[in-house]
Length: 221
Image (cartoon, helix red, strand yellow):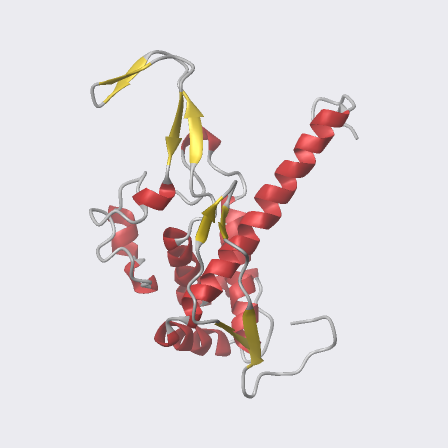
Protein backbone atom coordinates (compact mmCIF):
# COMPACT_ATOMS: atom_id res chain seq x y z
CA UNK A 1 0.00 0.00 0.00
CA UNK A 2 1.37 3.40 -1.02
CA UNK A 3 1.00 6.36 1.36
CA UNK A 4 0.39 10.03 0.60
CA UNK A 5 4.12 10.63 0.15
CA UNK A 6 4.30 8.02 -2.61
CA UNK A 7 6.25 5.55 -0.48
CA UNK A 8 5.14 2.11 0.58
CA UNK A 9 3.65 2.03 4.07
CA UNK A 10 5.31 -0.01 6.77
CA UNK A 11 3.24 -2.73 8.39
CA UNK A 12 2.87 -0.55 11.49
CA UNK A 13 1.68 2.47 9.52
CA UNK A 14 -0.78 0.32 7.57
CA UNK A 15 -2.13 -1.08 10.83
CA UNK A 16 -2.43 2.43 12.35
CA UNK A 17 -4.17 3.81 9.25
CA UNK A 18 -6.63 0.89 9.25
CA UNK A 19 -7.45 1.31 12.94
CA UNK A 20 -7.98 5.05 12.45
CA UNK A 21 -10.32 4.47 9.51
CA UNK A 22 -12.40 1.90 11.41
CA UNK A 23 -12.52 3.94 14.60
CA UNK A 24 -13.22 7.34 13.08
CA UNK A 25 -15.42 6.22 10.21
CA UNK A 26 -17.37 3.34 11.71
CA UNK A 27 -17.41 3.01 15.49
CA UNK A 28 -18.19 6.63 16.33
CA UNK A 29 -21.06 6.72 13.83
CA UNK A 30 -22.46 3.42 15.10
CA UNK A 31 -22.32 4.68 18.69
CA UNK A 32 -23.96 7.99 17.78
CA UNK A 33 -26.82 6.03 16.20
CA UNK A 34 -27.09 3.73 19.21
CA UNK A 35 -27.40 6.63 21.64
CA UNK A 36 -29.79 8.46 19.31
CA UNK A 37 -32.23 5.55 19.20
CA UNK A 38 -31.93 5.01 22.93
CA UNK A 39 -32.91 8.65 23.52
CA UNK A 40 -35.74 8.49 20.99
CA UNK A 41 -37.19 5.38 22.62
CA UNK A 42 -37.55 7.27 25.89
CA UNK A 43 -39.00 10.41 24.30
CA UNK A 44 -42.08 9.40 22.28
CA UNK A 45 -43.09 13.00 21.49
CA UNK A 46 -39.70 13.64 19.87
CA UNK A 47 -39.89 10.31 18.03
CA UNK A 48 -43.37 11.11 16.72
CA UNK A 49 -42.25 14.47 15.40
CA UNK A 50 -39.24 12.87 13.74
CA UNK A 51 -41.47 10.27 12.08
CA UNK A 52 -43.83 12.96 10.83
CA UNK A 53 -40.94 14.79 9.19
CA UNK A 54 -39.46 11.72 7.49
CA UNK A 55 -42.91 10.57 6.37
CA UNK A 56 -42.86 13.63 4.14
CA UNK A 57 -40.48 11.65 1.94
CA UNK A 58 -43.44 9.37 1.11
CA UNK A 59 -41.38 6.21 1.40
CA UNK A 60 -38.62 7.44 -0.89
CA UNK A 61 -35.07 6.91 0.45
CA UNK A 62 -33.57 10.16 1.71
CA UNK A 63 -30.64 11.58 -0.22
CA UNK A 64 -28.27 14.48 0.24
CA UNK A 65 -30.67 16.78 -1.65
CA UNK A 66 -33.34 16.06 0.99
CA UNK A 67 -31.29 17.32 3.96
CA UNK A 68 -32.63 20.91 3.80
CA UNK A 69 -36.10 19.40 4.26
CA UNK A 70 -35.04 17.36 7.30
CA UNK A 71 -34.06 20.04 9.83
CA UNK A 72 -35.62 18.28 12.82
CA UNK A 73 -33.85 15.02 11.94
CA UNK A 74 -30.54 16.87 11.95
CA UNK A 75 -31.37 18.48 15.29
CA UNK A 76 -32.18 15.09 16.80
CA UNK A 77 -28.73 13.79 15.80
CA UNK A 78 -27.04 16.94 17.03
CA UNK A 79 -28.77 16.80 20.41
CA UNK A 80 -27.95 13.11 20.80
CA UNK A 81 -24.25 13.86 20.31
CA UNK A 82 -24.54 16.59 22.91
CA UNK A 83 -25.82 14.24 25.61
CA UNK A 84 -23.77 11.18 24.60
CA UNK A 85 -20.75 12.35 22.57
CA UNK A 86 -19.04 9.23 21.15
CA UNK A 87 -15.71 11.08 21.42
CA UNK A 88 -16.25 11.98 25.07
CA UNK A 89 -12.67 13.25 25.55
CA UNK A 90 -9.61 14.17 23.52
CA UNK A 91 -6.10 15.32 24.32
CA UNK A 92 -3.91 18.19 23.21
CA UNK A 93 -0.18 18.57 23.86
CA UNK A 94 1.27 21.93 24.91
CA UNK A 95 3.92 23.00 22.40
CA UNK A 96 5.41 25.58 24.76
CA UNK A 97 5.26 26.62 28.40
CA UNK A 98 1.95 28.31 29.09
CA UNK A 99 -0.51 29.18 31.83
CA UNK A 100 -4.23 28.43 32.11
CA UNK A 101 -6.22 30.16 34.84
CA UNK A 102 -3.02 30.74 36.84
CA UNK A 103 -2.02 27.07 36.50
CA UNK A 104 1.42 26.61 34.91
CA UNK A 105 1.48 24.23 31.93
CA UNK A 106 4.89 22.95 30.90
CA UNK A 107 5.75 22.24 27.28
CA UNK A 108 4.98 18.61 26.43
CA UNK A 109 2.12 18.36 28.92
CA UNK A 110 -0.95 16.54 27.61
CA UNK A 111 -4.21 18.28 28.47
CA UNK A 112 -7.58 16.57 28.13
CA UNK A 113 -10.82 18.21 27.06
CA UNK A 114 -14.09 16.49 28.02
CA UNK A 115 -17.07 17.23 25.75
CA UNK A 116 -19.10 15.00 28.11
CA UNK A 117 -18.70 17.69 30.79
CA UNK A 118 -18.95 20.73 28.53
CA UNK A 119 -22.14 19.47 26.88
CA UNK A 120 -23.83 19.14 30.28
CA UNK A 121 -22.83 22.55 31.59
CA UNK A 122 -26.01 24.56 32.40
CA UNK A 123 -24.17 27.78 31.62
CA UNK A 124 -24.33 26.78 27.97
CA UNK A 125 -27.26 24.35 27.87
CA UNK A 126 -30.28 25.12 30.07
CA UNK A 127 -31.77 21.95 31.57
CA UNK A 128 -28.78 20.04 30.17
CA UNK A 129 -30.01 16.50 30.88
CA UNK A 130 -33.18 17.02 28.89
CA UNK A 131 -33.23 15.57 25.37
CA UNK A 132 -34.48 18.63 23.50
CA UNK A 133 -33.67 18.85 19.77
CA UNK A 134 -35.55 22.16 19.61
CA UNK A 135 -32.79 23.85 21.58
CA UNK A 136 -30.77 23.85 18.34
CA UNK A 137 -32.45 26.88 16.83
CA UNK A 138 -30.33 29.05 14.56
CA UNK A 139 -30.23 31.83 17.15
CA UNK A 140 -29.12 29.44 19.90
CA UNK A 141 -26.36 27.87 17.86
CA UNK A 142 -25.02 31.20 16.70
CA UNK A 143 -24.89 32.51 20.27
CA UNK A 144 -23.18 29.39 21.64
CA UNK A 145 -19.54 29.63 22.65
CA UNK A 146 -17.30 28.08 19.98
CA UNK A 147 -15.86 25.57 22.45
CA UNK A 148 -19.09 24.63 24.27
CA UNK A 149 -20.14 21.94 21.79
CA UNK A 150 -17.30 19.69 20.63
CA UNK A 151 -18.52 16.31 19.38
CA UNK A 152 -15.88 16.51 16.64
CA UNK A 153 -13.21 18.41 18.53
CA UNK A 154 -12.09 21.90 17.56
CA UNK A 155 -9.19 23.82 16.11
CA UNK A 156 -6.79 22.71 13.37
CA UNK A 157 -7.16 19.05 14.44
CA UNK A 158 -10.94 18.99 14.32
CA UNK A 159 -12.29 15.74 12.86
CA UNK A 160 -11.84 15.96 9.11
CA UNK A 161 -15.00 13.92 8.60
CA UNK A 162 -17.30 16.22 10.58
CA UNK A 163 -19.56 17.36 7.75
CA UNK A 164 -19.73 13.89 6.23
CA UNK A 165 -20.60 12.37 9.63
CA UNK A 166 -23.39 14.90 10.25
CA UNK A 167 -24.84 14.21 6.81
CA UNK A 168 -24.48 10.45 7.24
CA UNK A 169 -26.16 10.44 10.67
CA UNK A 170 -29.16 12.44 9.50
CA UNK A 171 -29.70 10.22 6.44
CA UNK A 172 -29.40 6.97 8.41
CA UNK A 173 -31.75 8.22 11.14
CA UNK A 174 -34.26 9.23 8.46
CA UNK A 175 -33.99 5.86 6.70
CA UNK A 176 -34.58 3.89 9.90
CA UNK A 177 -37.35 6.15 11.22
CA UNK A 178 -39.28 5.80 7.95
CA UNK A 179 -39.80 2.09 8.59
CA UNK A 180 -38.95 1.04 12.12
CA UNK A 181 -39.19 1.85 15.81
CA UNK A 182 -36.55 0.63 18.28
CA UNK A 183 -37.52 -0.11 21.85
CA UNK A 184 -35.02 -0.63 24.65
CA UNK A 185 -35.45 -2.47 27.93
CA UNK A 186 -36.40 -0.73 31.20
CA UNK A 187 -32.85 -0.62 32.56
CA UNK A 188 -30.92 2.50 31.45
CA UNK A 189 -27.53 1.84 29.86
CA UNK A 190 -24.36 2.53 31.80
CA UNK A 191 -21.96 4.62 29.69
CA UNK A 192 -18.50 3.11 29.58
CA UNK A 193 -15.56 5.44 29.01
CA UNK A 194 -13.38 3.38 26.70
CA UNK A 195 -11.64 4.86 23.67
CA UNK A 196 -15.14 5.97 22.76
CA UNK A 197 -18.32 6.29 24.84
CA UNK A 198 -20.01 2.90 24.70
CA UNK A 199 -22.94 1.38 26.57
CA UNK A 200 -21.42 -1.12 28.98
CA UNK A 201 -22.41 -4.62 27.91
CA UNK A 202 -24.14 -3.30 24.79
CA UNK A 203 -27.82 -2.55 24.30
CA UNK A 204 -30.54 -5.00 23.31
CA UNK A 205 -33.42 -3.57 21.33
CA UNK A 206 -36.75 -4.75 19.99
CA UNK A 207 -37.18 -3.60 16.39
CA UNK A 208 -40.77 -3.08 15.27
CA UNK A 209 -41.89 -2.27 11.77
CA UNK A 210 -43.99 0.87 11.70
CA UNK A 211 -47.57 0.45 10.57
CA UNK A 212 -47.94 1.24 6.86
CA UNK A 213 -44.15 1.22 6.42
CA UNK A 214 -43.31 0.02 2.90
CA UNK A 215 -41.84 -3.45 2.48
CA UNK A 216 -38.47 -3.64 0.74
CA UNK A 217 -36.30 -6.30 -0.83
CA UNK A 218 -34.28 -8.56 1.46
CA UNK A 219 -31.15 -6.83 2.72
CA UNK A 220 -32.57 -3.30 2.49
CA UNK A 221 -34.04 -1.04 5.10
